[in-house]
Image (tube, rainbow, N blue to C red; front, side, top):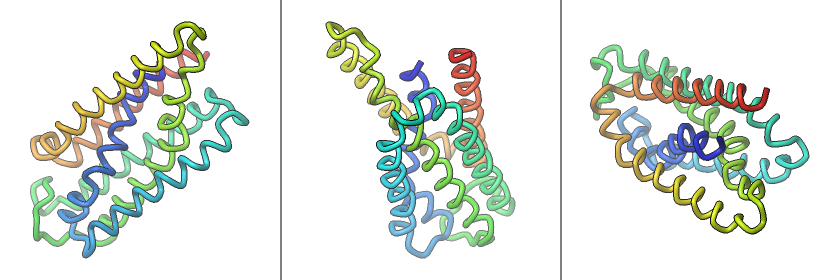
Length: 191
């Protein structure tokens, strides 16, 4: 389940880091690269935090607690994009001026999503190889890593196309919906 979980949620986190400067530039931030570093720094800080709490708190509990934060971050980012782009036809248009409160909310919700992702799903996927029997651990970890990076390629290659085709509101809403379905799967698996 962890591989499916990471494929369905995590690579949106990687993608928001990869394309954050592009999104923040289109959203009208004065220094989009520095703004993108806020998202990247959040990822780093909460990844380090997760290393200290993962085994103490437990993977199951962390997954169950972090998913609602991930869903809320994505859903509220979608709402921020919707309010931001009301005057531009639901699209981020280069050179347009967006309401500052909605741009800041979008940034804040991306930080919230990344914080919850890095604490939960982002770390847990890479530690699941310990669940394989010792004689299968190397092969299992290799297949897991290959699946994660294959998903990363697909999502990263399609993210900007999706943003252009259906707009940022629908893109982040879609991701929130996929994250919600994944959370339901985790709830069923761990009940």
